[in-house]
Length: 163
View 1: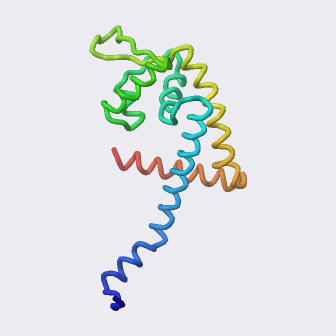
View 2 (view 1 turned 60 degrees about the vertical axis):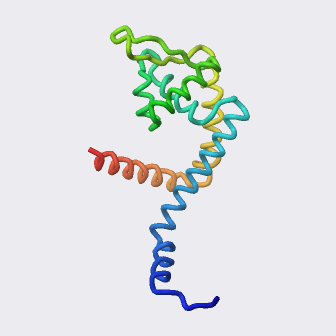
View 3 (view 1 turned 135 degrees about the vertical axis):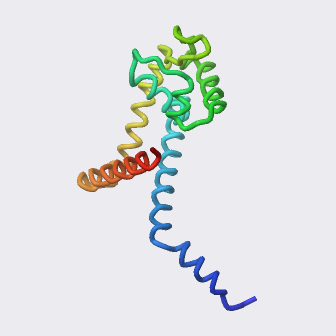
């Protein structure tokens, strides 16, 4: 069936191959591939997922800070039930514990265990190695500075648009 392409098909093909679509696709593919590499290395070397590392980063960032399960869900952009399941797995693995809030018994606070902190330190080193190798290493120092500055501007624009 060798029919002549319809005008809508040609317009759709041009739109699908536009520089904006291509460039954004490259950003998403690169970020996804990097996240997959980091996740695989963390699972292999530390026995945790990249999402679990994100929880530990948040918990270890402010050691004296009390972090509620709800705040973690917001930070991780997970649903409440997704966060609950993730924290259940992390608690079973001995990485975190939930404690009742002294101010509100309905609120569960989450804190890392000593094992969680030890795992975090190992995982942070693996994460840093992967980021250095695949995010920083392929770029010149100037290109890296420009990329991170541009990503910061994009993030700022998105946060301001959400307000």
